[in-house]
Image (cartoon, rainbow, N blue to C red; front, side, top):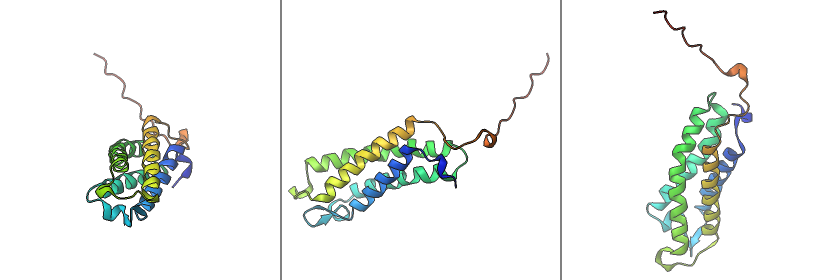
Length: 145
């Protein structure tokens, strides 16, 4: 495990994922938390949070930048879906319920999660990877004809 390989966008994604996960246990509408207020949206939020947390874990544990980059790329879809669903549920609360602190924390977390995941996808750098760790395989010489 090498924490030097984790980019700032990876850390932000993980932090936002943890905050989102924690906010799901707070009151979102009246006395209902996200787990009780939603039937499918909560699973999308959970999936987005888990992908966000997986990004820095993969960056720190994998020698190649391909796996963290792949997780970021795939994770942007649940992040986008979570952002759209939470914004919709802020504008139109289920059952006309009163919005509590959890929904605002969740909204901030999904917005930060989407931005961080997008930045992780857009940044292909793999910091902390020394040139001695990169395996370069030479191409075979062309055959004379």
